[in-house]
Length: 457
Image (cartoon, rainbow, N blue to C red; front, side):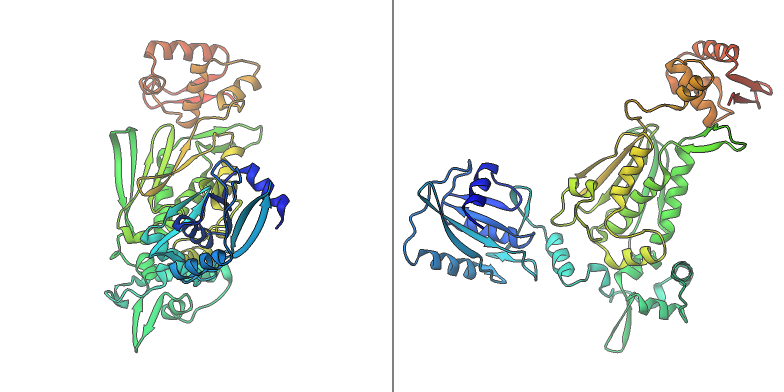
């Protein structure tokens, strides 16, 4: 590191790995601890927050006394590299700290982490997860000593075991052999206890509820259910609910068989569901909340971002993330439910883009993590009605496009239902149906009651 690097840092301003301080104080030590708990960084002393170097009056023994104070006030103690550099005749001290190998590091009993260009006080959950992850473990490895092995459902164990045996082409001699191989049972002093992961995967004792509902409006619920059947089964149950209430269209491509197109990319929705299950903080006892609206699907899950990660990094896939529940994620991975850690959200976002839909909105909210998936098309993307009309040499109006889509998604849909969906009168619907019939785009098969619509393909 030299003078040119410092000059560039002063121009660029404070950021993820650089902090400016006018003088040495506890705030300097706090920043060093925050850097040590993240990916390392540098504190420049003798520089104001606008990047102007004023310099420091450093006596012969001052620098060593700073380093001694840093060592005394941190645990485990850290000692940064120190360097003196002159900028325009002003002496600037650079304190450089690497990421500490055994995290987290505390300053006066408090824990900080660097996010963006500022330091953040870590929560008790953040501290626990960082400690376990540094030691290549997680909360779900620990034994549930208040429960017994008898509380595990043998059928659920067998289901997971068979999925893994088929996926990895391995064979376990018994259910207990399977549990031991995956650390799902913990042996202590001659006793066997189920791990927290086991209880979540194979028992209903731990609250792993998912509340999922169909909403007409934010406060009007048309259908609501609680899913509580072990984490692996919850995936398929949630997907069954979603596919029961999101729309599906039939696309005519000239092939003998028409193709199905869901309102959203199904694999992307499944990715968000699985991410919610394996990253949820089950210690909180708060159920996950999934909501289906006519134009969007919302997933909310208790538990914030993993430490050291930003939403932007997760969306872009530029930084590897580790699951909050490592053991549960390992079972999901080997069962073929996820491909690999840390890439699911990026892959799901790409699938929405390929589908022509606007990207899902991701944010931290109310102590949890929320993903909102919209069915709104990206500007310039073709809707089904537009593709059909142009293929037959016709340009359809907005209402006619939506009518065609609704009829293809549900060939038995009634005129009043179409009017309600489009927020127009039944007379307007009948007039548009008449126009579509004259254009040869629509036929009615059977009587008004019990018949169906057939869209020309």
